[in-house]
Length: 362
Figure 1 (cartoon, one colour):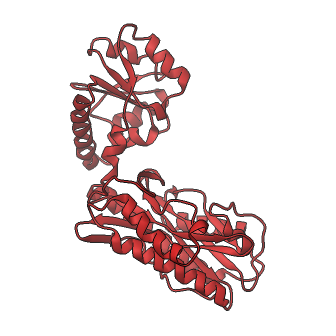
Figure 2 (spheres, rainbow, N blue to C red; figure 1 turned 90 degrees about the vertical axis):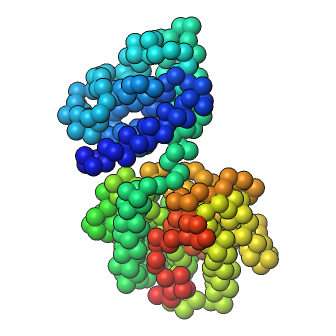
Figure 3 (cartoon, one colour; figure 1 turned 45 degrees about the vertical axis):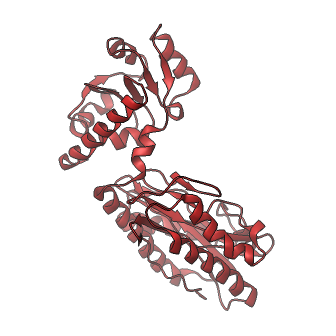
């Protein structure tokens, strides 16, 4: 992270320290890589952060000695080759009782080693404090996500003229992946989904050797990553002239997504957005064919809090990017999913993905 980003990470750690006090913790060991990156700017693959009320200690090894000095200049760096957990005890013993660790970032065995290295002290799984902070994005994060969304829109526009009979799902996935990288994406947000015809009835289909044929539904779900941050875009279309059944199915999903977007604004419960999307699909008699949540948060991870699912009561805060992705899947026929990346704003939302949602007949 460039030097001007250190103010962001320092502010995040300051906010996390306030949460530690409320959680009755004297320190937090952060080992989940995306959380380490969020709090330090460290982009390497081997690192852990120990956050105390008056100290910031970063553990890595000699491979990242210079990278850590550049990306985490405001922390004490401890070289811990082959063992990020062992040295923690020596630092924490003088910090007071109450060490929290990330249960999603440690194996059971490492958790036990952490406890055995601090006999008599409370070593407890911490609530998802960093994940709570990550929900609302600052302008630096949103700038990266806007760029990632733009790359996805541009990659799709370049792909559409190449969709023709005989091309395989796997070939299309590779073409999309390469396009996003060539346009400037640092990596992919997730494994690209490409499904033709009846295989589009599988929401998370893995692209294979199935060739595209005239009359097929085509489902594309993909995203680029920029500066660590993800985007997500899904569109469905037809090769050739769409049948009436395909048109009807597409319109149901498009109407459902429009209803969800119309409901989205800062302060709305996540479950309300889900309900708004489900209602048109249920009214069309297809409620059982919409098997997944309406959406999720996006950021350093493709799928993070908040979760837009039935009954979710968490209110979506201003500045929170979410995916809105209703879909209907009919075995033996195919499926339609329409997904956009949007940011909740007071009184409405900001749309980051802009590809057309008209039914394309290629």
